[in-house]
Image (cartoon, rainbow, N blue to C red; front, top):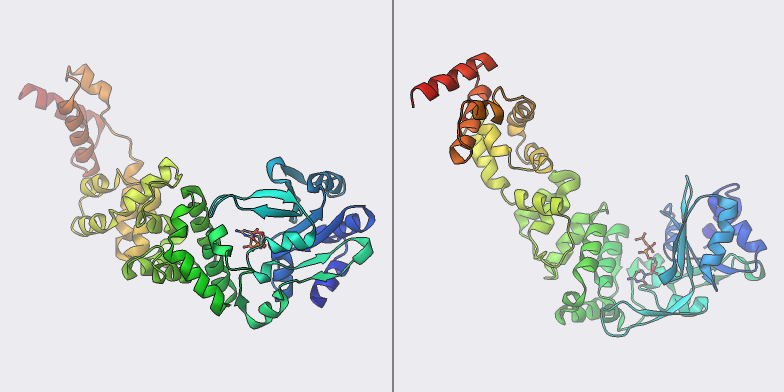
Length: 385
Ligand code: CTP
């Protein structure tokens, strides 16, 4: 915590310093909270500055932004605001209590004090605050001994209903455990397992589950969390798919999603296409391995999204050359277009399409090397009909 206080005092001209100066001089009672306090205590650079204001955070954000001159985003329904400056992002939330209408549903929120606000949070390590107001500047609020848990490396919930109230906390607990190399505290583990056995995750909307999965894949230790989810029988994954994940680069999340029941997930059409194509990579690879003919390489890969094609050499480096050939072939302009066939009175329909494809295949395989030859070839075909 000493780290936190000195950080707050010494970074002159920083967004943090300007924010603190603003609150010290203002009538708003504000605190640094959550991830900011946790990360600074851990000696990690926080991603953004989390603050809580007792009172109207939106009003405070508007006034603060006159000094910071960043981009102000207001989320009226949540009573929160963000200021995005070139250097940093600062989140301001109104201190609130949350009442859950029923398990796994989004809570109703009411204004509160900082202590009540800390009471509604997920884990002790996220339930600490430091005042940045003039009357008690630097005072630490740590009602659940989060500092102690940081020292011990423990993820601990504040109360036994925490995972039922908000089952996304199951994902969050695993993420933090792996991100910081912490352990999930014994009792917390038990109540987490109870919530899993009660199938609490099934009660979340697809949107919220997808959100959590996306967050997992932003983490360095995503693979450990995916393993934990499988071991806990939340989302089982086969060892061979799990082992593939690191090879796949930023699109690895789609391989994972393609193994889950994603009917309820609000995925974009392009994302579903990637998932669909990824499930075919096994057969694509074996077909590519068996050919070196340009037209066959082209026809195997043409229906597949580029993101998935890019992943093939990551899985089978030997196929890199054929993938390069495909991307070269893709740029080739066909000698024969639909209009040429129309001019030759070929009727629209299946035959028309087959003929167009045949002409392109011949061109890709260098059996026809100019438009003139291609037209001659077609005329011969016509005459022989
Ligand atoms: N929080 C919570 N329950 C949730 C989500 C969030 O109690 N399901 C609280 C936690 O106190 C958390 C804060 O809201 O610290 C902010 O949430 P978020 O931005 O998701 O987490 P950070 O703590 O900023 O951590 P991260 O580094 O993962 O962003």
